[in-house]
Length: 101
Image (cartoon, rainbow, N blue to C red; front, side, top):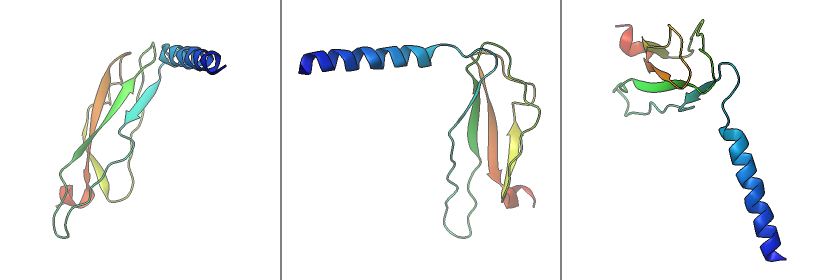
């Protein structure tokens, strides 16, 4: 019985992996990483960090607006022209006070 369960589990996981690996219909954006860590000692400023916007869909992803809140700012925006399928663009995020001086 253990062998039958193992085979079923393997087939089920393989089927799920195959379904999730299929291309998305239309544009489909994935942002990574989903969190940034700007922790530094008091009195110092963190360097900017990158986030990536990847289009895993099958048509161009149009970016109409990118915003950020809090004490942070988008310092470099490479996503304004959109993202073609199977490509990505990067956004550079920095601490707001560093770029407002």
